[in-house]
Length: 432
Image 1 (tube, rainbow, N blue to C red):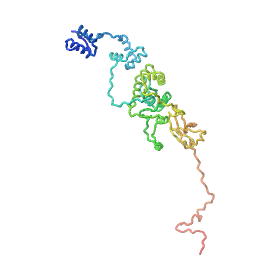
Image 2 (image 1 turned 90 degrees about the horizontal axis):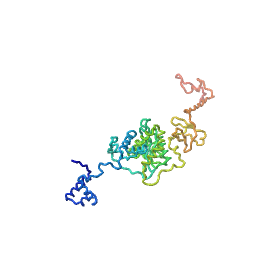
Image 3 (image 1 turned 90 degrees about the vertical axis):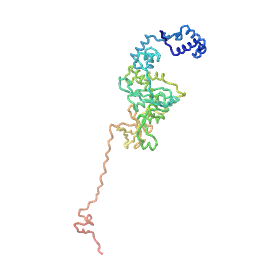
């Protein structure tokens, strides 16, 4: 007995044609139920009457498709995947096969090949907690998210590093740079490089790391001025008029978190294939090749036209803003103490009357120190050690030139008792 494989559509067609043949239904009615024209229904029914049940089966069933890939090419692609891209997902592997190995293959085709060969498994995402969707900002430069991603970027070829990532909320245009650690200096440099390329964003969305948020109590001056205590980065953003927004959870800044995941997948593999194992080469690769390709692939058009990045104001030097600043008081000997270092102000500053006044100590990212009074740079020399205190001589005690009375001088004994007897004064009395 012959077994015929049929699809659901073909079984439906067989059922209706059998009713037409039995006279229980007209062919016109069956054509309407099958979604066929009457002429097409007549042709299909004629083949059914001639060939029986097999007449409703599609004639291409079991035949090799015109667009089918030959087995040799499929084997070649799977061999390349095993040798070079065994931990790549189908999407990324298809991109590299097309661009690096001249083996273009559709993503879904590759996915099915990998599943069939046992090289890939369908991955179902778990059910995360419900969160409300936030619409993208409308303009490019209206909001930029920034975060540091700690990861084994070089897969053991060197130590772990951090990738500082900035992504525009409206377009997903991304900038990134490698550093040894996520520090204030790293945040300063990343923001400066972004600002010199694009301009100053209107707002910056960050997490609650100590780089961006301080937990110290406000000083007396801050309480009097009714201002909140700021970190060095927060102070710099305030000077540049960039709104600093602190996220309440990682999911709140999900755009940059998802971009971190893209980097941890694609960038790690690209660095491996390039044989890069140091930060300088990795940053050059990012700047010259990887970021351009990434933005071309993942950027979207902003909802509204116009770039809201601001130009760096005239007269503002980013290297004078994006650095560590602290206030110190000039001592009476015109020295300034900062972190157990001593700086002697030069005589050229004498017209400023700085003794007892506050100056700003700035530590630049290259380690050099600037002393500022307002916006004026002060000349100084660093002292090798703490200045010695000048010992002041005490004034000599004043000595009298008058002779001292003798011990038995009447002046010393006047009005006193000695051995129970009154000592009589030798002063002359006048009797009445």
